[in-house]
Length: 171
Image (tube, rainbow, N blue to C red; front, side, top):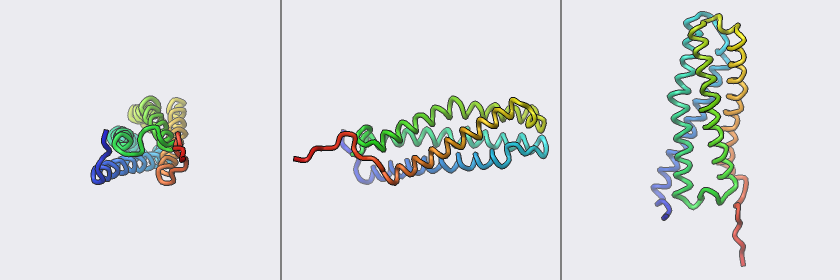
C-alpha cells in the first residue's frame, strides 16, 4: 500500500491525538470523581447521581474514545512508514492499548456498572455493604492503574524510547 500523503497523515495523527487525549482526560476526571466523591454519601440522590455521572462518562466518552484511539492508531500504522511491527515502542503501545480496552470492557466497565446499580438501588446504605466496598476498591485500584498506564503510553509516544525491531544493516 502507498503511504498517506502529508495532509492525510496529519489529519489521521490529529484524530488519533484527539481521541487519545479525550480518553486520558475522561479517565482521569472519572477517577478523580470516584476517589473524591465515590464513597461520600450525603443523600441518596447525590450519591446515586454521582455514580450515574461516573457511568455516563464511562459509557459515552471513555468507551468511544478508547475504541477510536485503538482504531486511529491502527490506521496510522497502516498508512505511514511507522508500520505495525517495525518499532518496539509501537508494538508496546499497540499491545498495551489492546489490553486496556479489553480490561475496560470486561472488568472496569462491569465493576462501574455494578457500583452504580448498588448506589442507585441502595442509596446511602450501599456504602456500608461489603459488595459495594469490594467493588469500589477494585474500581479505585485498577482504574488508577489504567489511568497511569495511559500516562505512560503518552510518554512512550513522545519519547519513542526503543529502536527498530529489525535494524537495517548498513554496508
